[in-house]
Amino acid sequence: MTSISYRTANVDGFNIFYREAGAQSAPKLLLLHGFPSAGHMFRDLIPLLADHFHIVAPDLPGFGKSDMPGSGYTFDRMAATIDRFTEIIGFDRYALYVFDYGAPTGFRLAVKHPDRITAIISQNGNAYEEGLGNGWNPIRAYWRDASEANRQALKAFLKPETTIMQYTHGVADPAAVSPDGYSLDNFYLARPEASEVQLDLMGDYKSNVALYPAFQTYFRTHRPPFLATWGKNDPFFLPAGAEAFKRDMPDATVRFFDTGHFALETHAVEIAAAIRDFLLR
Image 1 (cartoon, rainbow, N blue to C red):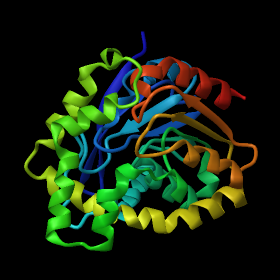
Image 2 (cartoon, rainbow, N blue to C red):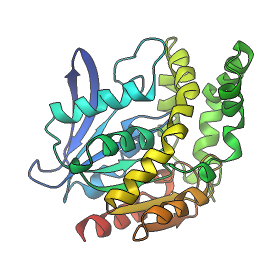
Image 3 (tube, rainbow, N blue to C red):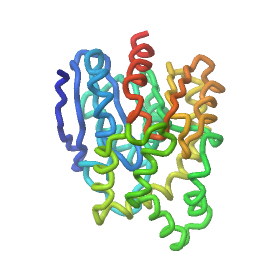
């Protein structure tokens, strides 16, 4: 049985909760989750990889059991906190697994510290405009006009039924999706202080799109070993976004799975096998 530890790191006065498994002498793998989840989204993946890797999966600031930041929170600040977190826990060289919000967070780390990144796995973690689906349209409207009406419209993304949709859309059999993940996500989203932080991050996501050229320059310049594992039925991050990685990294491996946004809910075994083969090579 895999032993998983549940810890909290003090990052310059800000508490980051994280899951840790595997031998500390093993190659390091940092798992970065996305909206609206937390490190628990990796609950099925971690036991499948911990025999070969030292794995750490933090809850991003404002998510899960990590501290809640104040108003006006940005992806730059989130990446800076996670960057400092890696230093505190001794992750000096590591592979990245990025998903959704974890992608622009992790890609910032890679741009800042290319020498620290041994490989990247992107699971529905976008870095190209063609990868943004129509599900982003209400958020794009807020980017163009940060009116209070457009901000309030984004609260639809925080409703319990929207969370469930993100887990089940594009899945062949919704009964195969455990309620554990989306129920816990909805519990954390229901905290009174959570909604404004999440709306701030939705508004700031435009900063990630503005950084796409910088991310792409990093890919072209450093050519990290790269694996894209993609739920092909994701309405938010389209398959074209996965294929686009090969434009800057011709040696990148792209794998599609017949599932939706939260691909680990239905294909953890298959994705773990792909990661194991990729990283051990």
